[in-house]
Amino acid sequence: MENASDIWSVLIYAVAIGVLLACIFGLSAMTGTRRTGAARGRALSMPFESGIIPTGSAHLRLPVQYYLVAMFFVIFDVEAAFLFTWGTVVTAVGWVGYGAALMFIVFLAISLAYLWRAGALDWGPAPRLRARPPGAGGAAS
Image (cartoon, rainbow, N blue to C red; front, side, top):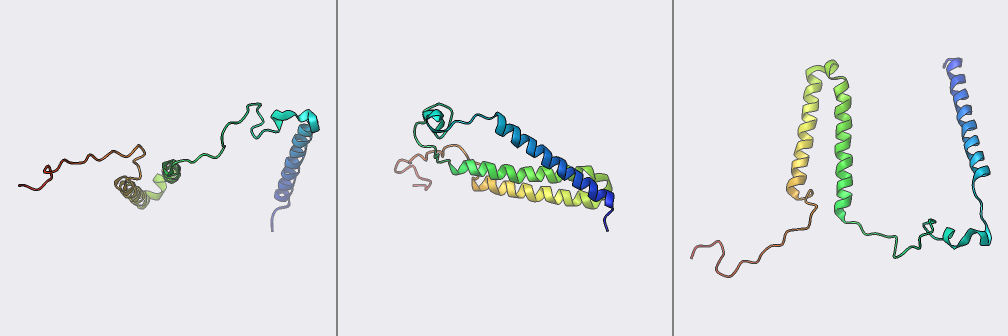
């Protein structure tokens, strides 16, 4: 069974958070501007609500490479998080932990090499292939 003082401290914390949220929302409702009807004006009815007249569509078609960069960042950021946590206990885990971390790094290096070889890291425009003139092929005459 839980200690009663632990439950009371959590309850007091929850009540304090509730009071803080109520104060924040209450002050926001009292001090915020409220315009209704014709007082809203045309600019506040616009999608951006900044007074700038929007031009064109807000829908952008982003290239696939944009999403690849985001996915690679997440993958290798998680790798860094694992290695930083391993670094805090490196002396406690000994050689077994060192071997596991080394195997983890090797696995990630192999996956990075695969991505590089597959062309997933080529984000620039594709190079144009030049047509060879007839008779300039690789076969000897």
